[in-house]
Image 1 (cartoon, helix red, strand yellow):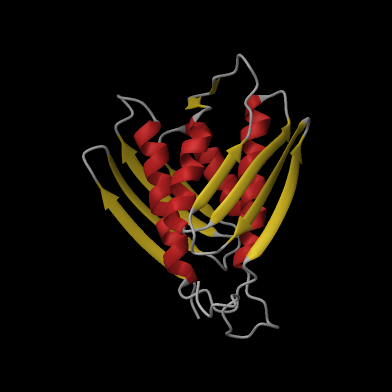
Image 2 (tube, one colour):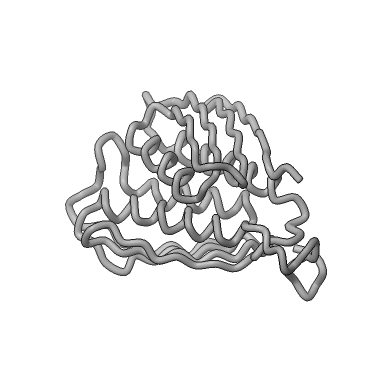
Length: 198
């Protein structure tokens, strides 16, 4: 069974194409024209073991908000489509990832119920990381969780460097998503829910 999906979205603000293979090798080809965001999406693919292609042309002359949020929307939709009816998946997973002084925990339930708890404090006085507005990390994950229809809890335990905090967030989420979407051979083709559907 191929767990892949490709989606495109075109608005007056962004034009996006995303492809994902949930059972990939962690290879990424990403171009959003926001260098730090590209770096984060590459980390998401590499540490989630997803093959990921993202091509986005957005209204960066306005700001990066539309690009970051809309990539989250399209990527979340791709994950939802690639998961299909979610038969055989692990469903629940968590990961805690350090990056030097930063430590972030991600907990995921591939539940069909979109919810994001995001409590990842950013260090004072560091509103930007390179060309990236640090506050957009929350917007990306909110859009992703909504469209992927997953419950996500992202908690920053500590961190003094905004780059480290955001990168640890993406890596922790990647590892939790990889584990939660993995096929469990013990489950066969059963849906991991007492309801029989997710």
